Structure formats: structure tokens, C-alpha cells
View 1 (cartoon, one colour):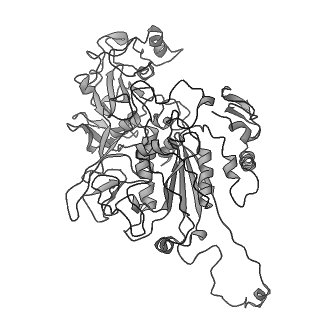
View 2: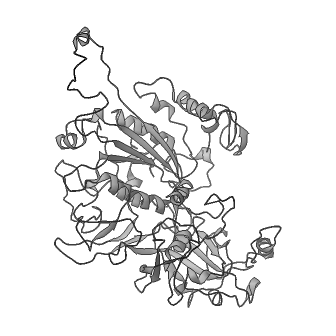
View 3: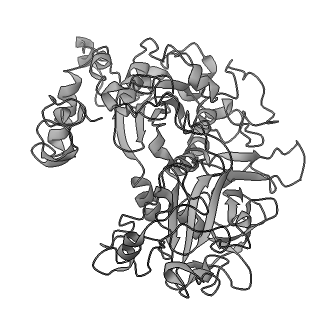
Length: 590
């Protein structure tokens, strides 16, 4: 778990906020008459006689930085004091692939689990050389994005195929996960591995990857993997393009990236990556982009584009995957699961879950202002069929249109988070793009940008307070991508007798907010006014945040920020500065 947590920490910043309502009563003189020397039938005031399960509101980013690699290759991923700039075989990488398995790429254009990997004494997950297999651990490092890891962590991953098992059937179902689509622009990313043990993790040998031309003619110079889509746009197929040699900068060229037969990189780049006193890469970077006639890694250029889709939870080879049987007695129907299933579904159809969840995410309509509510507080029986584990928005899921408590099925958090895309990407640019400066942007322009998570956290507190909805007035863009925007239901209401009976009196239940942020906050200076609407405050938002900063020892330390006094407008360089009160340091970060 430590290694997984390190990987997740590179993705998300977490903030926990507890919002509680207290009731007090004056003691009366009758208390003095109690027989204190005898046991009394009483319940401590902090214990409820019925279940009082927690409510968790998730506030999460949706901005474009989620579509970057989770393993960046410029960080110390295992805390050994050395930067890890490529695949580290002894590290266990988290993702859609099972690190303990070896996979084959099949004729149905996806990866299928073939066998368990061989774990060596030094902790490497290797595959036998007798077959042309891929290490799941290697593929997690090579292909996973931040949004993939969030989706897997929360609900098991985005399913491109969500097989349905008919009632009383023993047929094995098929579930396939797919990597996020990255278009063909700078959101695409490249990985390079040049270890002499490459045959342990891929179908390639040192000999098969030895160059026959270019800067490394006659030299083994590793495998380059470019993650992108097969179209310049929001959709298409998520592919990994394989080239023989060192093309680490293939994803940084101007315009369309990772194309065969592109323009030259230049001699300077080639030298930089090889020289000890510069890039220290050991292997020269190629001067020219790879050609479709000699630099492909597979049998042809076309065959060197592999779809990043993987079959998961095959009951004949479960390995170390997090798979759940549906129903619990099934031996043929398993589905990948995450926090939403583990904590948000009961063990049976009519039992309570361990927690209720609500979800707020960023909006494509109001991308610079707070977010939109995707699901009201409740368990996930309105989004997941508890009989077969299929998501209710999947074709043929078998979910009733309405639950017995009146909730509509099929919409909500999972469908919304599956709908996150690089919004507005077309064949030439992003919709609304006109080379705006940050201070020229307004809601609805460059909709994939904007990360006002702090405002979403305040929005979550307003929700718990029973305030009126602050959803965007316009929801056209969200609706076009299948993102639900739902009206606010009071989470403290007792009108739903089933909910109150299963989860306890809402006013007695603990309430929490969990913030998941893709990276640095942006356009996040408008939380003060909505914070003023909250009851039982003892000061402004600034005072609360500054108290936290003081307790954390942030005041007076050097931080990478734009403005340290709150007076600067957009455009001031983000650099190391001596910080004062924390609110002044961060309010104007673009």
C-alpha cells in the first residue's frame, strides 16, 4: 500500500473538512436527584442507539491536467533519494493492469491476461521469454494517466465493455477498461525504456530494437511508447504507438505529435541526451522523427499502434486484481471495484452501505466558478446494479428506472466522471480558443481549463447547510458529454423513511468533504462570498485559512506563488517568494 499511496500522492492533493451540527441543552435542577450510586439505563450523548453512518461529499477536478501521465519520470517515486526518470522494475505501479500478470495483445485489439508474472528475488515482475507477452507492471508505468487512476480508485475504472450476466446464468462475463483519450496534441505523452532486460517486460529483445539507421545506427537504443488517440479530437481510440529507438521528445513537437515521418529534432537535442555533463541519457536522442518504413517496433507502422484496452476480472485468472463477485456467490461474474462499491453499496440489495456519497465536480459550462452537483447524498444502488455489478448507465444493465425510494437510476457520479474529456478539442484547436490571457477568460471559454476546487469545497459546505442550489444556470455543455446536473436535496431531510431507517437520523450523522485536486488550483478566488452564507461561522474564510496556515507552519516560509500580498493581477511570475498570510499568497494564482 505504501507504493500505491506514493503514486496517488503525485496525483492528488487531499483536504478533509468535517461539518458538524451540535445541539446543547441547559442542565436542570432535577439532575441532582439522580441516583448516581446505581447503574442507569442510558446512552452516552456521542453514541446513537440506531446506525448513524457517515455522509461523504466528494469535490473533484475535471480540468485538462487530469489527462497527463500519473508517472511523470521526473520524480523520486520510491523515496530512495534518486530521481526515477524511466521504468523502475522493482517498483509496483498502480493502474488498470494487474502488476502480477503478463498480457498478450490479441486479435480483438485489446490486452488479455495470459498468465501470472514471475516475481524475482529483487522484486521485479517478469514474463517468460517463451511467449510474446507484456508485463502488467510495465504497462501501468507506460500508459496510465491521472484520470485513469482516479477512476480506478473510485469505481474500478472506465469500462468500454461492461458484460451483463443473465439471471441464473453460468456464462463468464467480459469487462474491459480503457485508458483516457488524449487527442494528438501536447496532452499526449511519451515513455522510453532502454534497459537490457526489456525482454522481461515486453515482446521485444535487445536485438529486435537495435537501430539500423539514424543517430544510434547499430546500437540498441530502447523502446519509445507514445500515448495518444487516433484522432485529433475528444474521442477516438486510446492508443500507444511503438517506435524503435530514443524518441522521448516525440510528444513535444509543435502541432500534431507522435506522427511518423515528421520534421527533424536537430543535432543539439541528440547530443544533449547523451552527454554526461548535460542530459546524461547514455543513448543519443534521434535527430529525426521516426519513419514509417524502418523505425516501427512491431511488424509494420500500422501494427505498432495498440489500443490501450484491457480485459479485467477474468475469473480464471484473478491474480491480485480488486474484483468483486456479483452476486457474492458467483464464480463466473466478477467486476472491478473501488471506493464507491466498497463503501457505497450494501452487502445485499436491501442492506445499508458503510457510507453515503454525494459528488460535486467542475463544470464545462462554468469552468471558472465552483462546480455542479452530480449526485445527491445516497448509496450507489442508483448507479450500480447490485445483482450483476454492471453500471446502470451501461447498455443492458438491467436496472429498474426508479428505485423503491424514488431515485432515478443510471445518472450520477460514475457516468459523469466517465464523461470527462478534453472538452472542445477539434481538428485545429480548442473551441473558444483565441489565445486568451488568463484575465481575459470567462466561464464557458476553454472549458477543459479551470480548477476552482476551493470554491467546490465551500459549495459542499453549503450543500450540508441546506442552502439553495448553486449549480450553473446553463448546463448545455455538461449535458452534451453525459454529465448529470441534479437539483440539491437536503441531506438532513427525514422525509425518506427508508434512508433514515437504514442510515440513522441525518442530523446525528457525521458529515465530511473530500477534495481531489488534479494539480494547482486556478480561478479560485471567489469562495469568500459563498462562505459568508454558512451558519455558525466564527470569522471569514480568510481567517479560517490563515489559522490553518499558521498551524501548519506556512507563514513566513518560501513558496512558489504568483503574489504574496494579494495585490498583483494575473501574469506575475510564479516563483519562490517569502509568504505572509496564506490567503494572500494563493488568492490570485491563475
